[in-house]
Amino acid sequence: MRVLVVGGAGYIGSHMCKLLAGRGHEVVVFDNLVTGHREALRWGRFVEGSLHDAAALDALFTQHRFDAVIQFAASIAVGESVREPLDYYRNNVGGTLELLTTMKRHGVRRLVFSSTAAIFGTPQYSPIDENHPHAPLSPYGHSKLMAEQVLRDAAAAGHLDAVALRYFNAAGADPEGELGEAHDPETHLIPLLLKAALGQVPPVTVFGSDYDTEDGTCVRDYIHICDLCEAHLLALSYLQDNPGFSAFNLGNGKGYSVKQVLAVVAQTIGRAVPTVMGPRRAGDPARLIASSELARSKLGWQPKMPELETIIRTAWRWHQAPGF
Ligand code: UDP
Image (cartoon, rainbow, N blue to C red; front, top):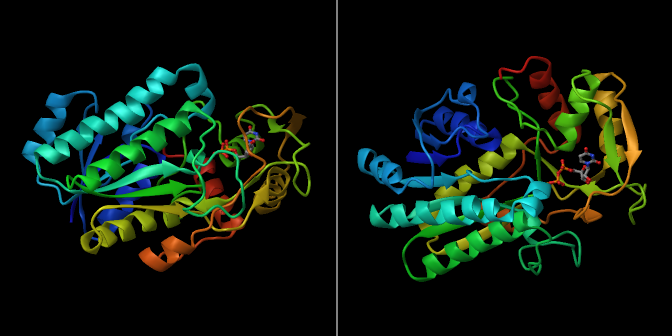
């Protein structure tokens, strides 16, 4: 397939490009490099540009014939979205709208879209399946839910076919050490703990120890980045026989508390990890665990690296020798 990867210079997008190229697909990346990394662009062709530039998008779709598009480009920091909601709606809803309009104009129908567990808000039951009500707690979550609604409506009108994949906690890195997670500033737990162990950041604050969980810290469902990318490949195949709009939750169905993650990190890397206890972070539900039964049955998805230790070991390899 000839696949356009929008946001292919980012954490998930770059891993996706490597996987697509490794399976013999033709890859073109479109990225504005605001948060992505030029050094991560090692697979496929690169076109620098913004989703807000309709002329650049039109030129991209005129120069290349795409069989499918994967849309990763988005602003992703929950806290920032509360402070700068307009930026989040502009990038995540407006940018996606521009992309869809261009796809429609050029007759490209198939889209896989990066969505998030943040569309669900505080869980009403656990694990969270696709029937769980949507009640985002942040502009970030709302922006992703709105984009899903746009996809649903455009699919119903017959303009495109789309799969939205709701990620729980993406983590880990390319097992060959060529790619990793490098956000600036880094806010995610596992890379922060690894950076703290390396002395690159101050001790990590544990956000709250008074939650209604086994040890009082928040529980999350961590999923290896490569397993996440495999689900996108399966979604591309699924779209060939299943037009319209579909959505799948992606996680391992197993939760780890912040304290448990800390213990597995320390054990896996054989170093102490400096942490301090702190207050809760606004908008953090106590427990977020996915039911991915639908992805397993409909997409045939089967995570290959579900163990937290594997996720951490691959991330640690990259953090010790980051390529960028
Ligand atoms: N967390 C923490 N300290 C940090 C960053 C994260 O205690 O410096 C906790 C956070 O409250 C959540 C879990 O680690 O329960 C995972 O957070 P992350 O930001 O990695 O992902 P999110 O769940 O927000 O998508």
